Image (cartoon, rainbow, N blue to C red; front, side):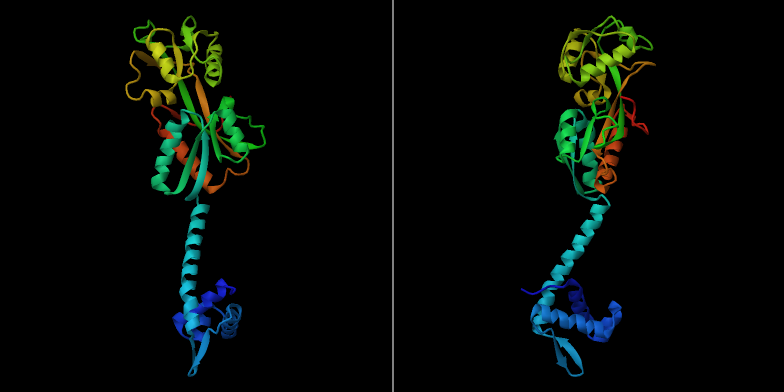
Length: 318
């Protein structure tokens, strides 16, 4: 099998195009001697004669023309490889695997993927739904490249394995049954609901978020019912079984438009709580072009998401 030297193949291609060793040398900024050496070296490597005398000039042999036919395909493929590599370095091609919690997938990841399908058709997002603990285990072992979670349930900034990046400050509103005495109260505050019966999960992130928000407002919520599914929570609120804090991002996913039937969603006044959504990558990879492109698309999805606030410049306290 011959040794296909790409540099020497380019010399052969240029000689075919220009016809003389002198013109080839000028075009490639080589000496005529260097051109002759490159061609004789290539002939030796391939084991076939490439040039034959033709008067005072040389011309390509049939073997050389056969070599060039295949060399053109090789050189074209290398050009495509160079272009694709350049696109990869600009964050325009490749695959970025994202692990994200349930409501972040339809609210943030899907819109980002749809945008990138148009703006960066060579860049693909692979999605894996995972809650915080699993998402960070997948990030650590390299199964995903980027993890979305709530700041309160992400590894702390002291964890040397990851870099956390702010994405979204998601307001928490309160869901009340239609006809509730406080449904139309002006400047509703969370503290006004201290005596209410509450609906939230028996454990997990939303349980901790609800209890922490209520405790920050000065009371411990009385849990009347335990549910983790948003449809179940809103159905019980509509039935008058209690009140609940709801994520605005989640609400626009599970009950778009005017909102859930039988439920009044009120924005809280001065003490309105938020949950902070963060993205994380393995430390050192945050500057990778593909990751940066996906993160930018996620930030735009967060900003454009109906009723949500754009992420602050720095990660908010957990």
